[in-house]
Length: 327
Image (cartoon, rainbow, N blue to C red; front, side, top):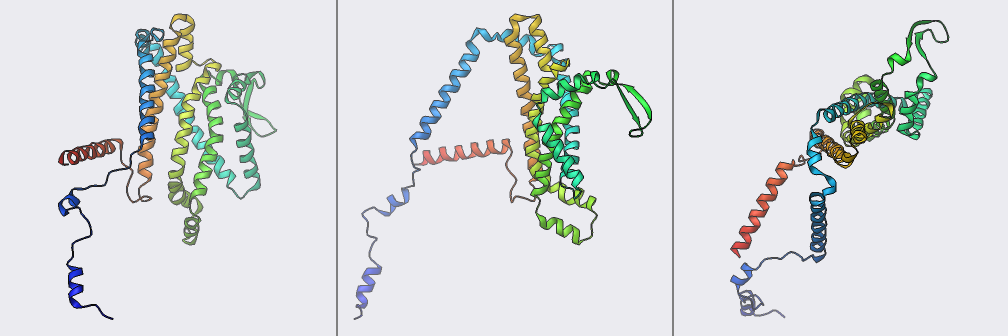
């Protein structure tokens, strides 16, 4: 049984079944869900941070006047320069060694695979301080080094004690240790490249070396960069161990000055801490921009820089203030 046409007209023209006027509906807005736990946690963190900063500033035990005295002293800066030199040499040599070891582990030769695996296994198992001390006392085992025919006559002979200076020992020890970890980072990055790229390059008849340099390795860098920079930060801190092979780096210089000025031990440790924080922060900033560079083509939009994030936050905050004022 069909309804009368008048009923259909009256239903279509009827007002919405609500008591709220249209103007009030337009003025209503959706309020975000209240999260008191988040605000409580934020307040606790802010209070703890404020207490920590207050303790640093007001505690006379830290001797901030002596901290300012030592922070830019020439002897501290000389130790800092040695730390930077050891880190730079070890990072480059360690990465090159890691690439060679990674290629050996991925080789089809069982001898190369076994040699690469054995090196990585051994150097990752032995503490760095043991490696440095062993190299420092290597002259007791091998007084001379020679180049010549294997198991035959030697053409050139060198005195190990003259070649193995403190700087050389520190760089070699850190490089050997770093190469073992860098090898796994590089190998993981190479394995992360999609197999289809390898097959496409092989189908085009490209040489293996060209495939690695131009196709595989640039894509692997997206995975290698963050992991190796993390290793680099660890390497910066590991340079503090070269003090045990008589090389006065940043930490070694602070230790030496602490022995001469026992009352300034805490300020000197704070100086070392702040310099390490500065170095690792600089490396972290470089890491961000390197990752951002290699993210091109892999993501639709590049990750925003810290300055862009700050501008976005300020813009959102001003817009929120305007909305609050309009209501």
